[in-house]
Length: 177
Image (tube, rainbow, N blue to C red; front, side, top):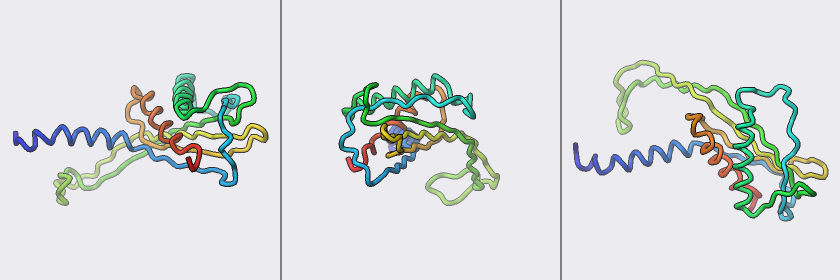
């Protein structure tokens, strides 16, 4: 094996793993007139009724994972859980959708524009979206929303995937911080 290749292979593999993990896209929206500076305590909104919920994803397991990840991130930012008179309320939503990627090139080396073969290749995967809402408790006004969207490749790594998505979303909360 070429010694340069042998030395660079581990780096290439590490970069591939990191790029694969960073495929979560984050978007936020918020009320630009709202003052977030008084936020110090939070609580969760009451659970929604089970009407029109997806039994494949709306489970107690997912609920625990999301809430633990959110609480861990908020704690690291200095927020405190408070059932009595919280400064803001939290809610989340989660959905999945099947996606299909299609390529018509066939096999090729990344450095080469040439293709060998002309077969159409398809790759089907599940894309998940996690939405975290911050609500003002007095009038239940939505004041901040963060979205994380990415491919769900490995259900066995769901804790890790949710943790990464929550971390990326809450890194943008509060706005302007």
